[in-house]
Image (cartoon, rainbow, N blue to C red; front, top):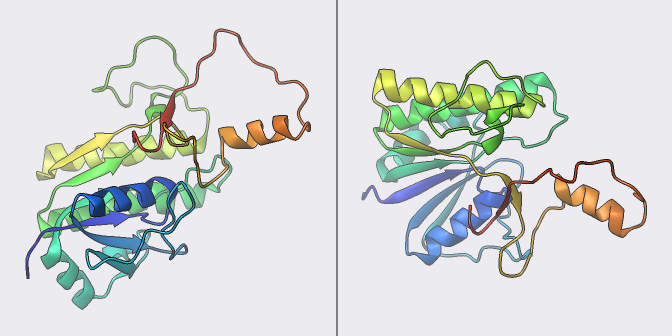
Length: 228
């Protein structure tokens, strides 16, 4: 059995669905790990079509071995060339336990499998691991004692620390990417989920939010989902 597949965690998510679709379009074999959301729907709200290149697997990154049986983990490991780790909660109001189990613990479980299978991984983080600070933030910085605006930001920082420790101490082959606020496609504006920034825009359009406190010099780090 050839080891040429890309395992994508969080394949049912907004970015995950686009990654799965893009990989298949490039002729890559994809093993899509899904949890609660079993349908992989792109930003234009069309489902990723069935393909011989796509295998969907139900799992849970919060569990050791992603909730897979020993036999399934061994079988998938034999097929996997690399891992793209996207599974996470991006909500700002989740419980501390959920951030710990999913964003931090889930990343730790994926790291363990990448080491066990000896495959490289792409860990998808966020630009907001920078926390509440101003000025230039360089890519090599992580924990510099910054405060965080949300537990989400803090959990993603802790997850990055796990990945970085595995790189330096255990030989993990990995890279970390830090998108900003994921928005609709750059060409059409299409987006599947109206979350985060879109909630505010929706309230404005509906006339439910007539004024919005803000700063004229403030900027938002928007990252179109196709760019991510």
